[in-house]
Image (cartoon, rainbow over all chains, first blue to last red; front, side, top):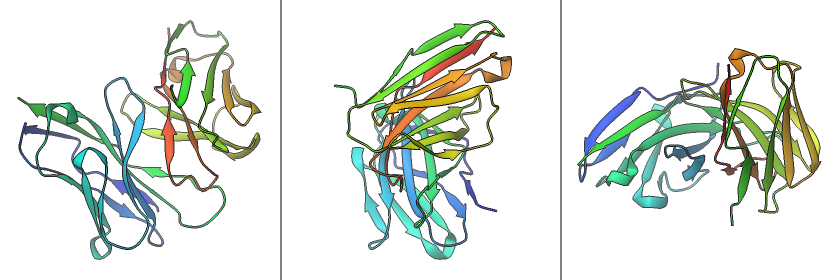
Length: 115
Length: 113
């Protein structure tokens, strides 16, 4: 069955510390991979995506993610967290082919940032 | 200028009522979506339209009916509201039906009492 697992429901880091949010997926073939962020009371915003090529992708707000095919993972990282990064983070995967593509979503990781 | 806008932002209503949520996008996208986010933050796609054509119709009660008068608008009408319909409903759009990047509205928090 196709699924996305975000093992950490909630993470707390101190401002300025590094961050890694984990995402593992189960899918028939290598999918497209996405990270979205949801700030409190807001909709979701795309942070970054992986389609092909360099397995280390850069996104907005200083985030990056690394695709590891052997581990079926797409972990999100940031070297130094800012208080404004406190939000819910969602990993999602989607098919590379087909006309009506639906994303499969993880359950999210809630990030709290201590001053 | 908001890219994907939904109205209302909050909706509190009694069980059994009928309500609508409106969505508009000014990005020129062809495809629009309705998602439901439950209290555990789980995101579930409900419907998708491409150029006014329904292309994704997930297992959703018949009480939910989407309508797309044109490709910039996608509305969601809900009949006979139930307590379990309480959730945040997100509208989103993408350039095409491949859906490789979705832009989301701010959400409508529906509370059924």
